[in-house]
Length: 374
Image (cartoon, rainbow, N blue to C red; front, top):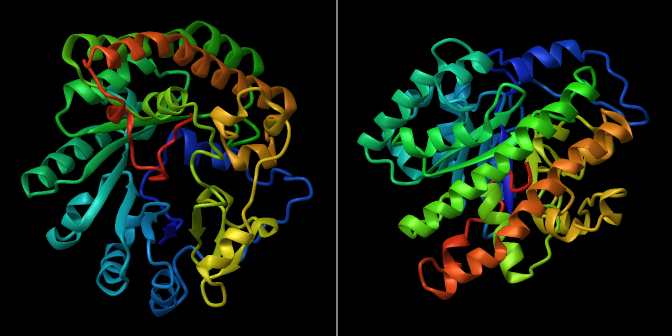
């Protein structure tokens, strides 16, 4: 199984869609859900307990997470030296990547870096100078011998031109192997804007997603290359194989979060939600987590594309911070994405039959914390 290890909840950036919106949401009522406000900002358990827990799972992966995990570089490297797992990954804003020792970054299987598109857009959302620092750090890692996968983690909001920004990251900067994105929706309560969000989806996001799919297919036709755009390759693979799926991120059934006090939740976004504490690394055997698996509920389970979507997001399903109406607006974006990819299936099947591409081109590492359904 895969385990997010949250090193700290502190961060060195004040991004518009994270810190800024969090400040605006302080005190929001989560209804019957009980919030644990005692969770420490940094790890308080003994690393020996993490070692015992992870090493009881013969195929465990650790994904370092924050806040910004590289604010705790010494702790991260201590874990890498002491805990034996199948793979190490990291989700980072990339600002402090230069602090990682060569020994440790070369052992990373995957580095997921938060970047939202080109320089102007990334700096708009994340702060002046962020884009250039991130690209510079990634280029240095490549020069120093990092051979793993680098994935651009985009947060997509009203300013994002999804087709142009994905193409920029994959074609204009020689640092990213792959890209995925997550909609800036259903994480906060006070940012719900029905008319603005609906208009943006109708006039910008959905048409640009369709254009991105056209660009993706054109690359297959012209160059025999399937670009590693995770929401496209992941969903298309399921459509080609007629393969049903559970929650695609793996949250609560093959992917779990170890928060800073050692308690285990289905995903990092659900840290501190007592109702979803599934155990603790001190007492819980990893095998026991399977019997405590968490599943999405309605309306996802009654949806016609649930077997393709998998439920999108457990946190959103549980909290519904935009209410039922807002929840359905976001679900409509998934229907649009899946519908556009279904329309592309015959073309892709023909390209496979002509051996311009192969079914294997759509394989990807499952549950590496990429969003397949944004």
